[in-house]
Image (cartoon, rainbow, N blue to C red):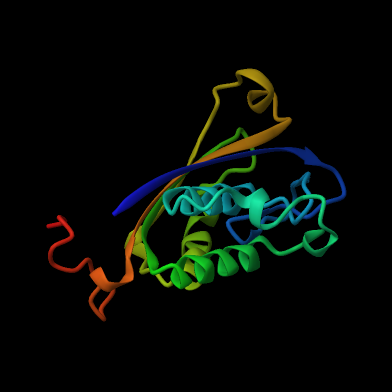
Length: 173
């Protein structure tokens, strides 16, 4: 088993759609970025790639490559899952913390968890996403943008049973 961490932050940008965790959140400016700016998905990609010691999102989807301009970050996550599987790994679970004042994350959690579960082929009990306030402090607290921290646990695919549960010998209960 391997653990990786990920981080991403973006400023809000008027005129862009806000997409977080693969879910469109209406009524709020979007995030700046080369792709769709989905900071949650970007942090998860970095955590997964970090756990596999395969670099980061920028090394696989460079921000100066026009191929990825405006790309759907869930497509990038799908490609990341395929890269991981090619190397014999599978995601066990992810844990995400979104730090922002607005928008409120809680109303969108179920939809985000469902999207991550579909793309990463995980059950919803293996996807944790939560929102936290920055209590008005700094650029996040003043509402200029948001930040995301993520952790991913991965394992060699051969350690998984067909049901998707952790296999014997993995050290897990």
